[in-house]
Image (cartoon, rainbow, N blue to C red; front, top):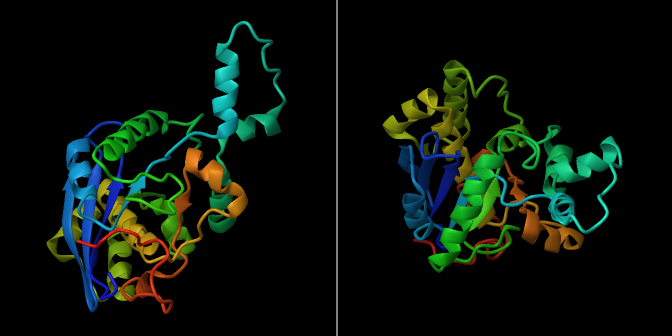
Amino acid sequence: MSDGTMRTGGVDLAAENKGTALAVIEWTPDRARLEQLSLDVDDAEITEVAAGVARLGIDCAFGWPDEFVGFVTAHADLAQPQTPDGGMAWRRTLAYRETDRQVRERSGRWPLSVSTDRIGLTAMRCAGLLGRLAGSGLVVDRSGRDGAVVEVYPGATLRVWKWEMRGYRSDPEVRRSLVQRMRREAPWFELGARAELMVESTDAFDAVVAALAARAAATGRYDPPPAEHQERAEREGWIILPSCPLGELLHWPSTESPAGATRTAR
């Protein structure tokens, strides 16, 4: 790892294999190469790749808000008095995790709510996937401080990089312009023919960004959960946002060893 060689992976997770994309980037001291980019990926392939990378970034919520879990548990107990509705501000505590609030502060946008929005089914698949990864012998730390996987959010990653990405999820030409910008800011990143798949498929594009965010996590260039939120992040999950621009991801930070890189690079 100290020689700058590693592999990172990224997953744009969907509720089913259709719509799920997987990217793997190989990093060496002087270049990075998009080694793999696949669509319609199943959990078995994700688990296999996770065993061979320094970090795997997964674009999906790793858990639900503590308050939401407590509310549903209490509501299911018919012997107990029902929880009164505390108004919209109270309902928002059920809708958003602590990491969602932190992401809004950095990126200016709320992530989708895992408890009230359409990503719930995907989060259920993700919970099963995390269990499968743990069952395979990998360390799963939902806070992202340690282990094989980190929660990532490609849209917020692009926003903290200050990229103009309005419409990128629906317009291939916007994605083409982002791929071109990626090549300008990171001329050392070899996309090869797979770049066209990033233009054709939003899922493929997001998987690559997820793998780039995983590189930031593996080299310690992200803001970990504050100490007061660490235990909550271990339950709810914590979105990793790079603390450096894309162009700086190739080289190791100036500190001795990356804070987040605890596994042997392959």
